Length: 213
Image (tube, rainbow, N blue to C red; front, side, top):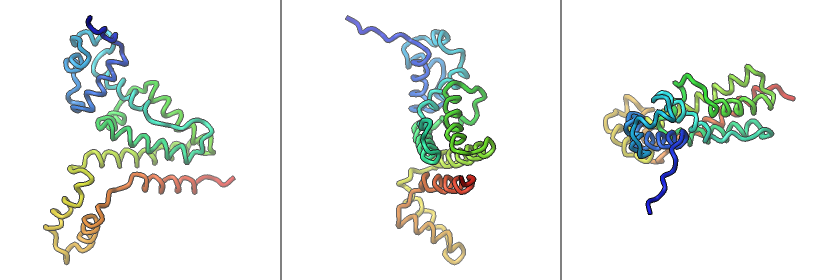
């Protein structure tokens, strides 16, 4: 007896697209390759998605739905910390997603829920509309900036000491003493940059800016 194939639907197509993009990069995401992933001819995909642009909108929306934004009643600082760390972890797990989230025009239900929950935790805690927008943009500047830098480094974090040693060999101590000092420290400590360090500085600054009740 042959195994019964799971019926194809939009979410199954989009989940397969996410897996393909995670594994082989967004450039590998074509209708033909996606059809192969789910075991159908490419034309059959059009029963579930309009085109590749619709796929990109859909997978961005699903990925955003994986980010944990704590519910109403959570202290804003706890909520924003958890939300930012969760978003960082999700974006690192899907290396193509950060740029796509920032560049998509359509806002789907996943994006809408994510934004509403994020802004909601801020507004519920005494942030004005203006200060909630400022807080959101400041937090996301750190989130996307740190994440994109991490994803695009030409070496893994645990390779920093080796790379630092290579760079150090071409620098003159008397000409660039502070650069040599920092690189030497990285080599000796094996330091890895912390997403949470910058996040906590931002959260403390936002807390200090709130009117005291």
